[in-house]
Length: 408
Image 1: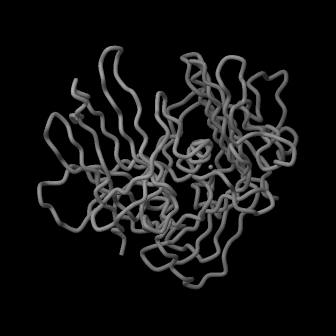
Image 2 (image 1 turned 180 degrees about the vertical axis):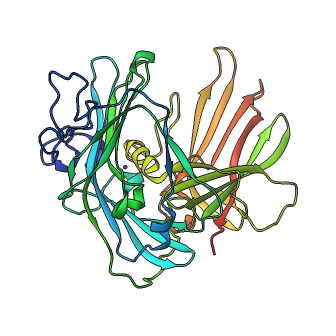
């Protein structure tokens, strides 16, 4: 998501926060001319001064690089995350290790990636969300424009990372004056071998405001260009999400509808699209991503590190909840082993019960092919009104009704 319950302690090297890198919120080139130092690797007298805040620079998918992807292309990042407890900054969770993104197969127009989170020594992590290698198919077609803004104050630099000096640009966005996070991103101007993550060299987010405390970070440590070949297309047992879909039945005010979530990836962007299915619709799922929202893969991975800190227990802790009970949930033709958690809800004097169901084991083979997002969410989540006679009346909710793979 490493040591049990995410507690720090002796012998738990992979959870110790790393020393802060230049992405701690201070650009390598400071804005004070009297104190400015050239970035690492910059010849004397050639330091490039920072620019003032400017309109965001578009971040575009590197189409040509993706279309020339080779089996074995790889980037490796050190990751770390720590979460505090608000006032007093009491640390409640921490994790650190290595993230590897590698091309495992090329079968046009698809590039298949394998994502692996490990300890510094290469061992699997114990954090539930980060415990398995994940599969990610990426489409290389160039049928639509994909770009995302890079926002914040910009500085040009020549940092050294993974044994190479890069021409790079830093984007520093400070939202702390309005109780937002400090976001720091460093990108190679020419992504080159880093096309898998759009040229990312370093990224960090530091939380601030409303009693929140914590930070999470990715730092490039290694990259490799592969030897080629077609490779073996990996199975979709444990997908990150792209290449899959899942359906949820939504009950609201006595009416029911089915919401389909389609997940895809194209040239370094993860796509997400939701739509309510017409009654009885059995059409091929996820044929059109033209209206899907896109997020750069590196931002998805950075958030993934942060989300990996939760849950500290399974199923997740829920306020006012009774101990979980083991039940069976029918989803399509599958019988899933679940933990049901009932909790007291509503204002004082109002009898309401929330009922949530979670997989007993989020990695169980019974849910092979289910996207990561869905397997670590509630499979069923309903609120009930309790009558004076003890009968439960549904007030609405949602439940998983099916999932599958749409990618060929």
